[in-house]
Amino acid sequence: MILILAENTDTRSPDYKELMAYLDKLPGIQHRVHHVKGKERTVTEVYLIGSTKTLITEDMRNLPCVERVVRVSEEYRVLGRHKEDTRPTHFEYKGVRFGQDTLHVFAGLCAVDTRTHVEQMMRALRDNGQVCTRMGAYKPRTSPYSFQGYGKACLPFVFELGGKYGIKVIAMEVTHESHVDEIREALRKTGSPTGVMLQIGTRNTQNFELLKIVGRHSEFPVLIKRGFGITLEESLNAAEYLASEGNQRVVFCLRGMKTNLGDPHRNFVDFSHVPVVRRLTRMPVCIDPSHSVGARSAGPDGILDVFHVTAQGVVAGANVILVDFHPEPAKALVDGPQALTLKELPHFLDDVRIAREAYEKRTGLAQRYREA
Ligand code: PEP
Ligand code: MN
Image: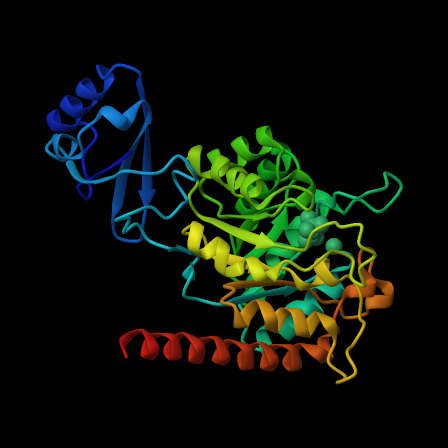
C-alpha cells in the first residue's frame, strides 16, 4: 500500500509526526518514506510493506497528511501500474521529459575513444537537433583482455564537449559504486555542463548490490537493461530494486535476448515486449537496436536491420532509442561492426520520425474505434 501525502507536507509538522507514530504501531507492517522531487513541488510517498491486506483504505485516507491511498498488487510495487493508480508515467531531468508519451534518441559511441571522435559525434547530434547521447566510459567486456573503457580519464572532456554542443543527457554505464562517485566528481569539476543517465548493463541486471547503490543516488536517472538470459519479470523486479531504494526515475531498456536458435542477429530481438512493459509499469521504455542486431546487415529493400528493428520498436510505442554510432566504425574500440556512421544519422532520424508518426496514427485509430 502507498500513502501519497498532501503536496509539500512538512516532515517536521505535528500532523506528520502523528502519522508516523500511528504507522510505527501497526503490527507486522514496515514503512519507508520517499520524497519525489518535481520541478515545483515535492511529493512524499509512504510505502507500507508487510501484511497490509487487513488495512482499510478509507481509514488510511483519513490519517493526517494523507491525500490518496494506492493499494498495490504484490508485483512492481513502486514502478508498476496499479488499479486507480494516477501516479505519473514520466519524469524530468535537465529540462528533458522522459515519459511513456515521449521519444528521445540516444545516438552515440558505444565506448569513448578519442576526443576528436566524441567531438565529431556531438557536433553531428547538435546539427541534427539532438540533446541526448550515449558515451561508454566503463565497458564490461566478455574477455578480460578486451579494451575496458577509458574510465574516469575521459569524463572531463566528454562532459565539457557535452556542454559545448548542447547535450543535456548522456547515458553512461556504471558497474561499480566508484564509477558513480567518479561521474559526480567529474561533473562537479567541469561545472555540470551536462547531465548523466546511469546505465545498468544487461550483465548487471541482477547485481542487486549495485542496483541498491544506484537506487540510492537519486540525483541521476537510471536506464536499466533487460537481463539477456532471464525472464521479463525478473528484469522488471531488478528495476524495482532501484525504485525501492528511492530512485523512481527509471527507464527500462529492451536489448535482445540470448538464444541458441542460431539466429541471424547477435541477440533475439524482443521489441514486441515494448507494449507489455508499458502496460505493466509506469516506466518509459527504451530499445537498443544495436546490441540486439549486432551487425550492419541489410534487407533486400536496402534498409539496415538496425533501422528495421528500430522502426518496429517505435511503431509499438518505444520512448527512448539507445543506438551505436561512430565517426569511423573501423577504428572503434568496441562494437564497430554494429555502429552506424555520422552520414547515416539524418537518415536514421528521418526513419524514426516515420515510425513515430505511424505509432501516433495507430493510437488515434485505436481511440476512434474504441469510441465508435
Ligand atoms: C552497451 O549498451 O554498451 C552495452 C554493453 O549493452 P548491454 O549491456 O545491453 O550488452
Ligand atoms: Mn556495445
